[in-house]
Image (cartoon, rainbow, N blue to C red; front, side, top):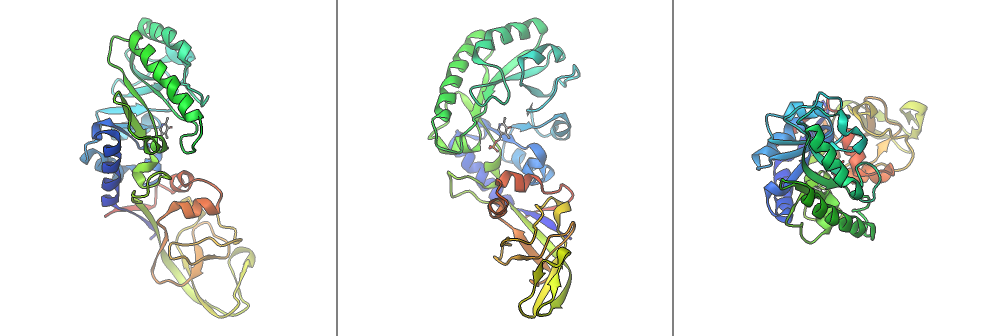
Length: 332
Ligand SMILES: *Cc1c(COP(=O)(O)O)cnc(C)c1O
């Protein structure tokens, strides 16, 4: 049966590197949304806890419920307020229009729109948001922002940082509490020299070993398939749906038990899509299988999602996060 191998030592290595960059494990918010970027949150979350992580960020309450016993602080990024919020969790305030919809006593971190224009309130709205929250009995514990372009070197990153700096000062003057500030995602953390003293970082992908700014990270996930069957494909015989591959000479081929239903992008048979051993897939991918040369019972499909990301003209995030949660995860 196909499986995912998760390298525990690689994860530890990456988290230690993040901690050294951020200034300690208590300066890290681990983003473990969407099944820990497809890696398997049931396996990854206990590792993060073991290493001393106390703060994580997730997508929604369902994800948070399953991890609430492991972490003292859970920030929920994409919750739609409904008046039934859980006092154990912290919710991102993505829109000031929604303030009155939260249950009294709900803990909030304000998302600040510093230029990405995806979510959040504007700097000039902060006085109103703090005043309204006070009236409604909501607890504002933090302020954060997200960079639109931290993975490319351009000026918008610096413009957004400058705005956030101003917002931190304003928010501090509006609150009786010592607020929690965070802005740096993976690429922002690794492109900056040092994290601001008063900030945590909020990192996802870099935990799993991918960054354009840091070569010493180790990739955590590798995907393996097992052989379903094998045969000799004779010269001029064709293979798979559409018979799109035709053998130029007799060859020993095998079919392996992973396909697009497992969350892989569907390979159409065109172009060279490489496996981890640099061999190519042959013919179109099926729903539950693909074919290639016979490499024995077990085959590493990829241990570097960038190869598939490049081929499919997407980013490694998408290749990883789509991996079906039903694929068995093995931690070693
Ligand atoms: C997903 C997400 C992150 C993590 O981003 P990475 O690039 O994976 O580090 C941080 N903040 C917010 C708001 C996010 O949605």
